[in-house]
Image (tube, rainbow, N blue to C red; front, side, top):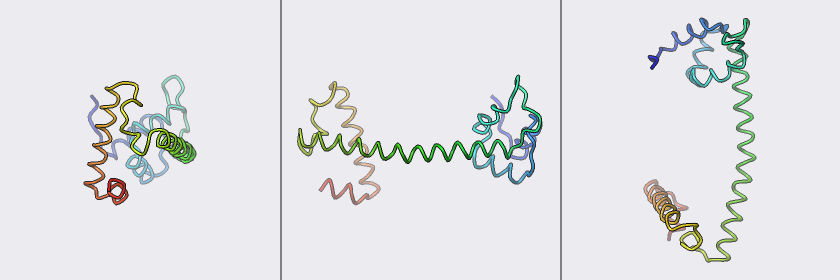
Length: 142
């Protein structure tokens, strides 16, 4: 296993790899915000035959990282709407067909094992929510 390196040594390592560092303060912020291993996935696009192309700047690598992050967040916002709608429709259909406690109907599960596993997860979430004092959970339980 590789030993952990302090940030300044990580920056030196980036330079040794062939990455141009315009500002050590910027490099330090990047490495503290997103670790070296995650950034490596982005600078690999600048490699040819295992060597980083001359002129590769950390600022360019970071810009790709930021674009990827923003794209992921944008997609997640869209996916979240679809997920909530699907869960809402699922709950609506099940509750109308099997009652308000459809979640606990064993016959709706593919196996007894799936049912038990799901009920254990539900109980665990309820205990956690109660412990956290979540008012909406307490209201629904009441």
